[in-house]
Amino acid sequence: MIGTSLIRPFCHSSHCVGRTLGTRHVVLRFNTTSAKNSVSQEGKRLSWPEYLAIRGSKRKWVTAVTIPCALLGLFGGAAYFGGLETDPTKPIMGIDPFFFYGICTVGCLGAGALIGPSIGSALWRFRHRNQLSLVDAMDREFYRRIAKNRVDASLQSPTHPVPDYYGEKVGSLHQYRQWLRDQGKYRRKALFPEE
Image 1 (cartoon, helix red, strand yellow):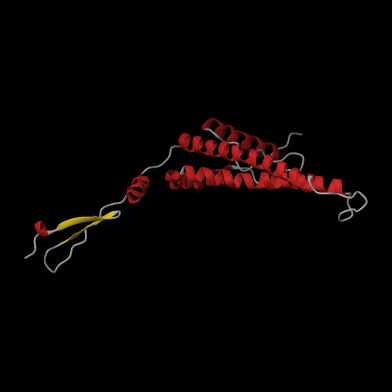
Image 2 (image 1 turned 90 degrees about the horizontal axis):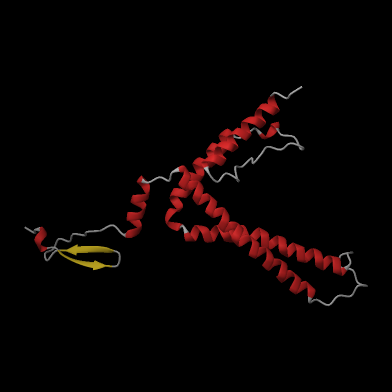
């Protein structure tokens, strides 16, 4: 008979394994830190004020990275296209070379502004990787509520668009309540116009 007193544990990497002196082997596994984090996050849920504060910090990260990326694109484009030799008598694609290089420089600015939000979002997700599952769950709930409560886009006109259709400016409960009031006011004006 092999008892539990014969098990001699030894640790290997992130889990511990036990073995007996006899012919029977027993494996004991202990939770790793990532398993503990996933278990503890399953029961936890962010409150709405916490979620909206996190969402606001993500927006600040994205803005903080977008501005330098756009400026870097502008200066990079100006340095590259400004250093090219140009012959004003030879148009490029039917456009004066100075105008063409100016358009290309502005295009570099736009490319930097488009790449910036992706980099900012990736940096934010890396920095807050321990809360991602909670934030993603709250994102789904938040956008479900936004889609449920926003005005139907078919009611808008070119001169009077729906205010904050995607709820991008919502950063607190007070702003969410104001967003709901604005949607209701717009809906009433669109369905019951004053004569």
